[in-house]
Amino acid sequence: ALPPAPIPPAEPAVKPARPEFSSGPCAKRPGWSPAVYESAATGRSHRSAIGKAKLKEAIETTRQVLNIPSDYKIAVVPASDTGAIEMAMWSMLGERPVDMCHWESFGKGWLGDVTSQLKLDNVTEITAGYGELPDLSQTNKDHDVVFTFNGTTSGVRVPDLNWIADDRTGLTFNDATSAVFAMDIDWSKVDVTTYSWQKVMGGEGAHGMLILSPRAVERLESFTPSNRPLPKIFRMTKKGKLDEALFTGATINTPSMVCVEDYLDALQWAQAQGGLNGLIKRSEANLEAVTKWVNNTEWAHFLAKDVSTRSSTSVCLTLDTDPANVKAMVKMLEEADVAYDIGAYRDAPAGLRIWCGATVNTEDLEALFPWIEHAFAECS
Image 1 (cartoon, rainbow, N blue to C red):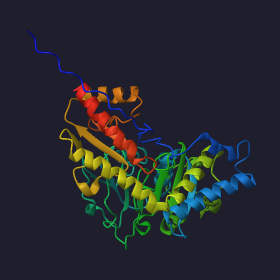
Image 2 (image 1 turned 90 degrees about the vertical axis):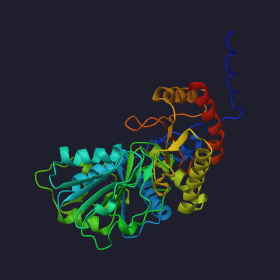
Image 3 (image 1 turned 180 degrees about the horizontal axis):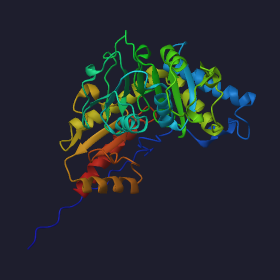
Image 4 (image 1 turned 60 degrees about the vertical axis):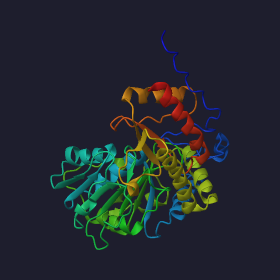
């Protein structure tokens, strides 16, 4: 007689209260509801007094929460983080050699734009594979440097910015979209910083933020790329001088005032958590919970090889099973309304990518882990 089939493990009794673990758009802040839109300036021009006031409030509250120096410029720009980093690269790169640092898909995409679209020829590629960080000391302080603070698709972050020289003559371009509000950024080390509302703050897509140091402003006013057309949504100067209005809330094109209201609500929530330090603590507590579970789970591993480079937001894991089984697990967890959108990025090694930013509650992660174990047993 055949041996009896093994009894499948029972489903865990508790589900995460909020199953949104997507790495973008990310979970809304705890307690969020559409009621936050009731105070939005809907039906009003973004050029009206109330529209400009809300946009200026978004800029200045961002400065307060992130402790951005008073002489740095902040703007709301089109097309999410992609729009922000592209308008910076197209407007400022080409004045000197460029070091392009990448270790996951988005940084690699910026390299492609610089070489294939901008067609710059004095470009040095500094790279590492998924799960690793390249030797950033290879960067040259007299070159412009483009890097991603936190690799959203690899779960690998820069542990610090000590590799950036204080006496640099080049500019540093910091794509911080999945780092800002969850990791401490030394503003003295970065000249261009970009991000979008829909990551750590759980805001809505399509709007980017651009933060410029005085040195970046000097580049904009002293360097005009030759034979390089700039679309309207990339232009930050007028008659050779910075368009100051852009950095007080006069956006280049029309923003969604509903999305602006949502971002303002997220910023107010951030202040209630104790500002930046409170947000960092929430994200790091989430990483600690994942670390504890991985350490006790022999078939789960961090994609990031070095503990100091592990992201506290886009946490990427590999599992000791076939990619098809991982795909089945992800589908099972979504259909059970336990975890949405936690599959690894399409270009990354097969595994899980679990968002652990500040808007995620640690208790929801702790409720998720038994379900991952259940799905692994069912699908492997």
